[in-house]
Image (tube, rainbow, N blue to C red; front, side, top):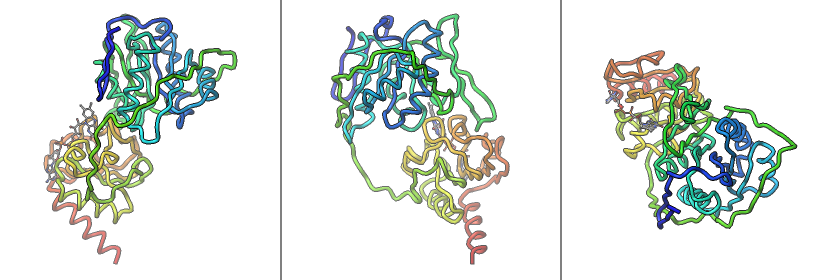
Length: 344
Ligand SMILES: Cc1cc2nc3c(=O)[nH]c(=O)nc-3n(C[C@H](O)[C@H](O)[C@H](O)COP(=O)(O)OP(=O)(O)OC[C@H]3O[C@@H](n4cnc5c(N)ncnc54)[C@H](O)[C@@H]3O)c2cc1C
């Protein structure tokens, strides 16, 4: 079996076919999101039926009753895996690898499916990378290309203004599905195996360093915010202070692009886009953001978008309802001054 692990991760050969006992569709479900897991299984079942294979589930922190519910929702075998309160995502990734190595026959499944969200998308990225697979996050539909049995995942892009179809290649094909993609099925006659795995999600696989951030208006409540002021690489640390001020004046929250998060001007929880939050504000102010598809796909249709960018050719202007071509260090203080004046 071509399977090994190290202190920091694991890898696995993926050239062999999935065994019948393991099944070639693996769904990863968390006990605290069981309903989302059941909906995911509706899609997993459909894909497995089209591929002529079975569905295995790694259920983290769910009991036997939850496992049986997943069987009624479409699973053939469910493995119950316990985690520890301080388990990290790298620990869950490690446990999935162990499950494949020990319970699923030692081969990577053809397809790995998770529910899209911060946890699912991040774990999916780790799995795809460690297994040298392919990845689509945030898909809203899946189909099988019968010519080579590969998946085709559909995803809204440009803030929902267009739809992209991605053909996944190789093995495993890792995909996260947006909640609501399918409705759960319930078949009381379905039977399957529910087994408590001896695997426990370890902790301490990553060294963590905690540092204090002085980013303004930190909040994980992006998903529910009706006003978001977001900054990108063009904002810089000083720009983010202005962005925080404006967000506070508008009763909104601060969002960011991946580049801004990577620069340390915003926290990972503030990232919007393919690997970040999906938001549905009424007003979205984008300052120093170019408007790449990976960022814009995090903004659902319906938002009024105001873009501030000094480059008139920036793609964000194609989507914006209002645009200011200019320096955000001049535009944002003007907004702030106007709002401050209005409030006194
Ligand atoms: C698999 C994958 C997933 C990804 N997921 C995400 C994701 O979830 N979210 C995300 O955001 N990105 C994501 N990205 C990254 C994405 O491709 C872009 O790199 C990123 O969104 C660009 O961020 P940006 O707009 O801040 O930077 P840039 O593209 O560099 O744009 C900066 C903009 O600021 C403008 N500017 C500069 N100075 C000023 C100024 N003083 N005043 C006004 N404007 C100014 C510039 O004209 C420019 O348009 C992902 C990429 C990959 C490959």
